[in-house]
Length: 312
Image (tube, rainbow, N blue to C red; front, top):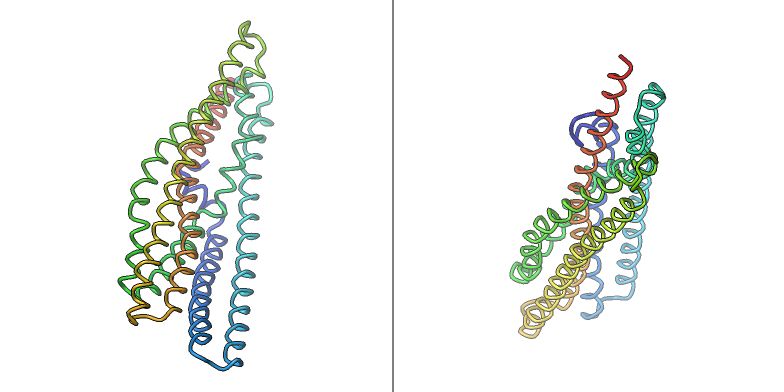
């Protein structure tokens, strides 16, 4: 296995990753257009535009939404296929090692292998499909929508930008704490698998009960950190909406902007909330997957070395 997760992603297919990147770029380029069409529909309706003009804009909006959804469907299925190919490779790599040296592995090594094949391979392999295309897609949407907002009204765009500044500090700190707990969780699960295979320990039930309790405590601490971060992120987004309502309402009353611009900003903040959340989730997955991959790599290397030593 490659030493780093990035090497494993590259080994699973650079050409496929390049195609995913192209689809992602096309998707966020198309995704910005519905905001402008929405703004024109609202302004046209409030300023007495002809019905035919509004209907044409509505049809254009529907065509853009359908195009965006179709591209996203292809992208997601393609990602899923690459992820499943990677999961299959990881599982078969462990199984092949076992088949080559069926009599040389210890019962403890068998327990680790069981944990990797049944549980650990799936999240690591699944991440390969989204590893490169996901941050490009979500960052592209954020950049495109943010640039559009700045173009419409720079000062009002500050209310949106302010939403992300505290989050960019909180996310890495809390994710570091989560990573520590994920590593502990995987280690405890491997010990559970090892002792399920090895029945020679007289204190096995007592040890297993303690490990199950530790898993419970570790998972609960992960939940608390994860959902506390979600709470803070949602709160900051609501503060962003409040800023748009207050400042946008003032600008509309004083005649500095049209009502369609405020609608576009509200839709824009809604549109960037999902990619920002997806980008945060991707960052979480990246850090957790790096930990998991290193544990799988180290275990596979150790098992193969042990088998070779015993075979010689």
